[in-house]
Image (cartoon, rainbow, N blue to C red):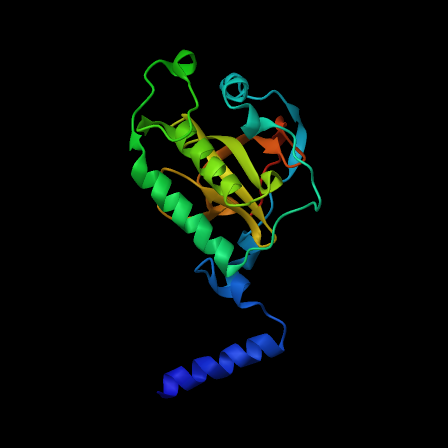
Length: 203
């Protein structure tokens, strides 16, 4: 009972000092790690992956330029945090992993297949979040390289709390700075058909 009262007092003090509970608790991290939650910095223009160009020809609506009534990252509310976790878990569960043994020649990015690789997971998550009203500017596909040297696709979600990574190789959503990858290129927030290289991160 005494411990509960202490938490109530601490919560009231945090609100009085202007801290937002969403920032402190949604990511399951102490406030001290807030510095690790950074935004990706785009460098120069880059060619989109060829498989993405094919994806856009197949799913035209996924790649169309959308009107931007407001710019920048979105506010990460409790509802949106729940949506991210639900979509991440559901897609990771529903698609049976199937390795692409043909390399670039065998890359086909599909939405909602029964079986698929990282590309299918990433585009399916983006598709589902778009359907739930998330703005395209906040849902960016990104190419990374794993520690084993394999190219890998993840979905980056841009929030005011920082850029978050939805990944089929992890059940949890991680800040960009904590994802164990070398970052190659990413969609630009103002037009999903345009991609850019990524500046080196500093943690």
